[in-house]
Amino acid sequence: MDIGFLFGWAEEEGVDLPTKADGSINIPAAFALYDEWKKKGGGGKAKDDGEKVSKNELPSSGKSGKINLTKQEWAQYYKTLGDEQHGNFVYRNEDGSRFVRLPNKIVIDNGDFIKPKVIRVLMFPQEEEMDTMLNILAAKGIIK
Image (cartoon, rainbow, N blue to C red; front, side, top):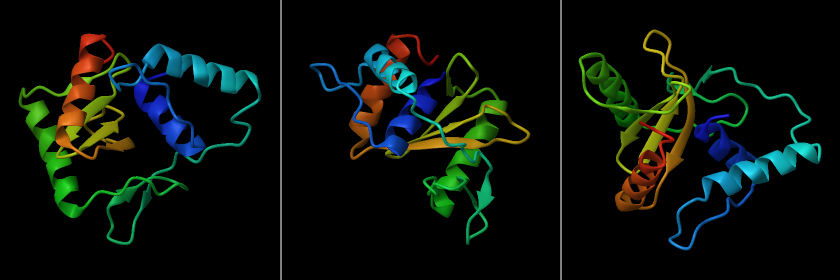
């Protein structure tokens, strides 16, 4: 299971992820929380992973509709994909998911260049908090 899925699960289920003393997410404890939830029978319903097109013809998530980016943010996202193809750095996790950094948001996708599919968008109240999270995930080797 990748970190993007974990954040998505917590958001969808309304679960508060455990934090450390410094306020960052305790990733191992969060995965343990998810495992415990699964053991208790959580997740019995099927999920709709299908990507749909929103009113403005930009991709959005399936039933949840939680992938809300402005046209400018979509443009920045696709520009970053093009820049990566030309050698620029983009964070990725071990399953190949790409972590695209936008102002105050991280867009997590499937890592594909031909048919990129946004899995989750993480929003942050301040850019510094987003930078801190990316640095912690990189230091732990979760993203590279």
